[in-house]
Amino acid sequence: MRIVFDYQIFVLQQEGGISRCFLELAQRLPQLFDDVETAVVAPYFVSPLLAKAGEGNRVKVIGRKVPSFSGKHRVLPVLNRYASRADLQALRPDIIHETYYSGRTVSYDCPRILTVYDMIHERFHAHFAGPDLQIPRLKAMAVSRADHVITISNSTRDDLMELLHVAPEKITVIPLASSLTKPRPGKGKINDGRPYLLYVGLREGVKNFAALLEAYAHSRTLRSDFDLICVGGGGFSPGERNALGDAGLMEHVRQLEADDTLLAELYSNAALFVYPSLYEGFGLPLLEAMRCGCPVACSNTSSMPEIAGDAALFFDPHAPDEIQSVLESIVLSEYLADTLRMRGYEQERKFSWEKCVRRTAALYRQHVR
Image 1 (cartoon, helix red, strand yellow):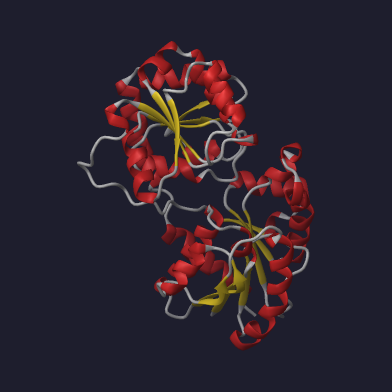
Image 2 (spheres, rainbow, N blue to C red):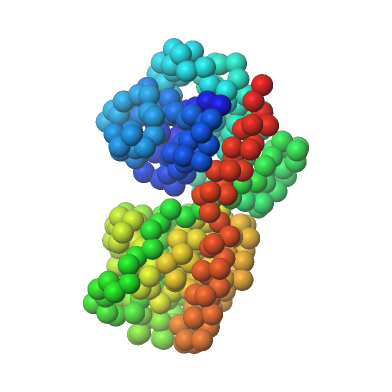
């Protein structure tokens, strides 16, 4: 059985969770099944993750990396759609797995699988601008074209059925897993040994970082005894800097970039991981934190209760006072923090790449002609 993953996500993302997930599948499927071959057909791509996977022979990559440029989302899909034709004719795939959403894709007569990660653009349309405004239309076209759709949570499946009226028999839920390697014990202290809360990812829009910052600023306990470390998302914006300055928090809130090794250490040493997002299709950082033994507090919306189970304390992301109360309750109780940590280990073990890959392979086999 020959599986081809298309170019779409690799021409849009340079880094990103979606790209990582497809590379995990492309690498692990042949390792688990002798009769499965995988390839990524992306004649022109910008993703360094894909380039690295190809150079290391972890994944068969048909294509070459080009520099990222403004307007790549318009130009590269068209180039790749035409350039992929000969490659697909040569490979003769049994399944094409489309990696993102497009109105048109390369023409080849075989079953198509599509993964839908979330319905955030439909639920929170006002938070997006530019090319992102086209995603709901393109997603609807891709879903209609697909022979079957994978969603990564029950929450996303329910949203897909409600908002695009997709029949339940056309959808299979296959959760993701964490790829983060647990840090070795005995690593040096982070943040000069001062306790800290951890936030990971983008901060604007539905990520709702402003509500966390308000909760932190209003808590005498949190701001006096704990720093707040933000990983990823780029440096603080002028608006964020003004908010931090007005609240007198410039010395206690910091932003940094981290590779996977440092990120695992930050999770492992944090007093608490906080995820105040308004909406997540899955919420992979929840599993990353639990895998590294970090207590979790997160929003009570969308997929987050499904993924975190009983291994987190939940809050209303629209209520900074409730966020403050939940965070304080954890950091002030060693027993509660330890309980969440132990439950997190158990909850994270429910999600594995082997389960994900085996269920995906079974779905492919159901659709091979």
